[in-house]
Image (cartoon, rainbow, N blue to C red; front, top):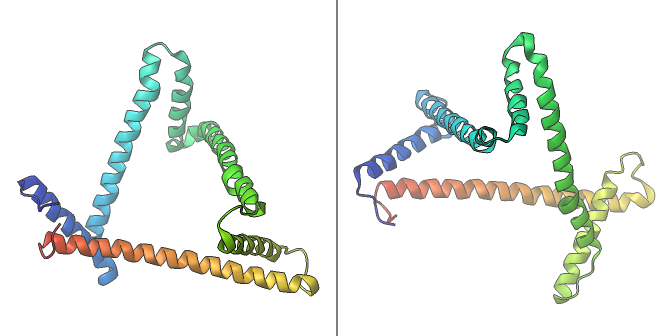
Length: 211
């Protein structure tokens, strides 16, 4: 990618560079007016884009079909308008009905989408022995099976973890610590990757490295 030559592209590049410096002035220095300006600008632009996008979605999904004769579309429109009664103290109770429907539908869809991949598929993959891959595949199978069983036994909080349960619960705690450590390490690596990308952008704008 070559360095832009169009005036608007160059201006946009430098504006992004300056806003990046404003945002990073918080961890590098402290909270200041430039950081707050960049923060408020980002929140305002994100809110404006969200409002415009959602309005266009409502128009395309509900209002236009309603105008074309689909009378049932008036139901979600009315429920959506009732959500805004939260801003009126006297009629705030009306917002409970669309919120209840929204939470109930979201909970039902969430449970349906969670049981399959997060529970059913995980159980099947754990108890299904590998058919290929050699010794490494069997090692991974045993490692996951032992880790899963011991980690579950660690959360048997209604039974004292002594005697027969002492060893597997301690092994489960080690597996949990390893998993949390890997998750934390992955998070730190992701943050450093983002920082590396910003540092590359910083140098590219100054033409110290090619784009």
